[in-house]
Length: 222
Length: 222
DNA sequence: GTTTCGTCTGTGACCTTGTCACAGGATCGC
DNA sequence: GCGATCCTGTGACAAGGTCACAGACGAAAC
Image 1 (cartoon, chains in turn orange, green, brown, purple):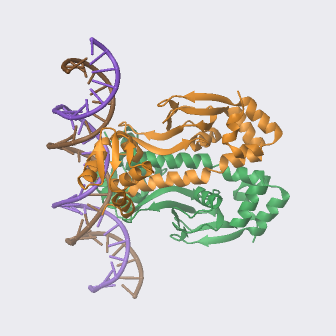
Image 2: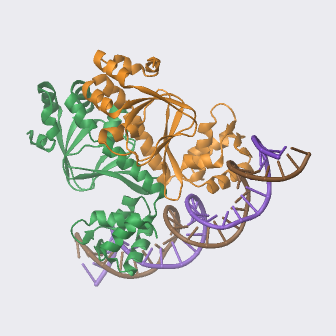
């Protein structure tokens, strides 16, 4: 295996000779097709993950089958839940699903622990993104606990449509993003359509009035 | 100030000479009465906190004034949100409230960053609890997003009553614990009372049938 | 082309939870 | 005793989640 993947993680260039060599020796590449399960809830965590291409969706599933997105991991990033599971020697609490074809480098738990113990730059690398992730998780709690669906849906549409005005996305996928039910999304979208804010088609949504949506996303349910 | 407080944090005994000395020089003790605000949402974070006595409740507040408990910090612990805010140089996303009289040691941001940069044992100390806290936050999301109120309430009652069968607690406080409204808790408790599971009094709840509550907490809304 | 099949969307009925507006009770300080 | 303040109970309603289907669309098979 080549070491090209290290280019995705510039911070690793700072590793000491020995640690870098251990890292290179222990790393293996895996490739996942769209929809593949990178890790499942309850499963033990056996390797640290460096994503080098694609994006993984990390989400929870409730008893009823309802799901909620926690965060996404994209190329050049690592997954906090994996880190946290490895450090605490716990099982995964959520599942990771390849949202696109994914390439990742796996680093076995033993090597990971060794590197964490030995190498300050590696620790720096691993912990540098913890702050942002915690912020993101708390934001999810804030939204789920207090926010109404309509503004969250509007925000999700805007986030997904950066650039073009047309998004390829099913109602079910939006429901997972918000942690709600598909029917709720359908009803809300129908409301948006009646107000002329979006155009609906099977599996795609056209943003017709971005300002109105941004307004709603900011202002709350008003 | 004496250095007695270090006894609450055995891991800090591993600090190098210089780091320990910096820690001792920079630390200051603060005392908070019950109900005092240790930190508020949106506020900048100026010091790391070591709790040496009492407990702090860390919670979110929604627009409607509804609140939800994220976690508690007790004697011998530190607060992830504080760590995360310091590391990422962000503001607090939640508020911390003294649930009992609290004694804490504050370490100014500059000294904290210095120690994080210089001292491996200090980093070890700070990051060792990250895993558990993330687990706890994800559990909150799981509960809020998917779980019914009744089993969560039952679980909260059991958690609070470890030992005696009588708890000093208002409906409002339970509502904060679950992130719901006080009326909802009142109605649920009334239901529990009618089934003979609890006895209710102003500001206190007697557990009458712990098994039934544990059952409900495990089994879901059945 | 038309059929078929799987996926996606729409809808109504019903349940749980959250919100609002109040009405009493309990407790405490004075 | 008498307010003032907290705590609890209740009813009416809104929002969101669940369930059970009915179509509707699009791709692939025939």
